Length: 315
Image (cartoon, rainbow, N blue to C red; front, side):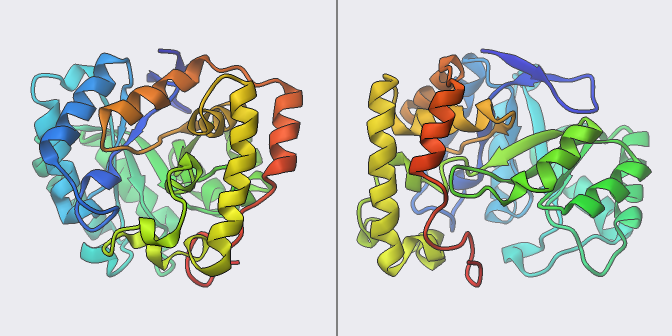
């Protein structure tokens, strides 16, 4: 496994991480805790150290699951979790009191004394970022958190937060189909020495090529609500995936590996999520794929953007 330094920290992390969100109920269909724990264990065996969870995934289930998986293996993991969404994504919270309550609850669920990387999941528009990050900095002083991160924050907010306490990672959706961060966010984090962590590098599984029609999504799959998976957008996006597949064959890799390798070539640290070991192993092999500038240009030409926005109401 190749490694890299995590932003403004002394941590060395794997150049690809593992996103755990899909291992909890109410996200991407059926789950199996036993298989999920085996997948986490296999990830650590393969040298994947950055494990990404959040308190809102499964309303605490995800952190509890990771806590079980880490028993006797804590030293092999860089644990990243997040606060900021209430149960069932009901609200965004950034008040200092909420921050300090959230960390204690996460530590209890995880069964840990400290968290390596603590993200604000979403910025609370009603609380100055300076107040929130100030409270997060207090957690560092208390030894409950080692380093701080933000998720889905805009460039001015990142700068303001970083002025209060060094930010080590900025996590935002980034893939062949979600590139708006290239305009302001990525230049800002590069300037400040912050690692850009890319979630959903496979556009929530669409770029795997396994989804061929809307009906392939289970009734309880949240992707049914997303514009990219609806109406005419679905087939148009399938056509793009097929074109990417042609390039992948020439590179002797899968379309999944091509898409993840693209994010790495762009300087990001991807955290693709999976519940199964076979997909994990496919993802991990991505670190050995080299993409030339010509490869990148061809990929960009085939897949300039997706049809449909990331979320309802987004173009």
